[in-house]
Image (cartoon, rainbow, N blue to C red; front, side, top):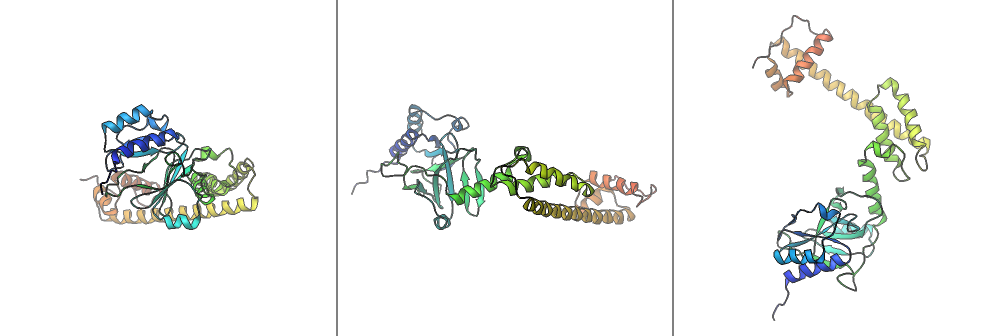
Length: 313
């Protein structure tokens, strides 16, 4: 029986079909995941059909990519373990089979979400600043990407992108709260981000104050909590603060202990008249650090000005 399947025609036609439902198309190198063209602009504007046809006619064996994020209103879950996703549950949504797992195409919520690798074991999220390889592209291994549930723009019996499931949205919100700089949360955060944000603010405050002034950090954290909508229960806030304070205290004690051991090693080397270079190599630090520690020892009178340390090579 004659095989009339034409993968070149299919890629171009699928690219046009996906563009018509609002997805930003990105041509990729043949049997590869790397972009064929500069794609920075495609995070903000979509290729016109004329451009898509010209590109795929010029590069007939190109793979097909879809830019995720706000330009396509897409969030894609890249799962190496589809069985895990199946157990957690997911609504009917476009799903593609990849060489190692599956891509789940969801509607992007009305918040800015960056692409995140390793949001959970075997799970990556592609959103702002990302893209995915789409069917019918060919993986470097030779395996072909296939739609298990195609988008409705390619198949009238397909599915429209669904909202992300609650468990995925919770993973995203948790990661966003952890990765956001303090300057973005200092004006307060909504429910669901308060615990993690409180830990971040507490860590910032405690990290730049001496232990005797940590009461100031607590009052500042209480003031920040009042800006949250709604504020976190003060008992929970205090528990978070105490956990971070204990961790900060232990870290300082550990650093102090390591510094003390380093000084003791330095003193021993000085007694044996080793050069700075020899000491740096033996201890595993650079010469400027050796010099700084040496002057620290002099200041603390652990060694006298008569003690000599050579700058010898």
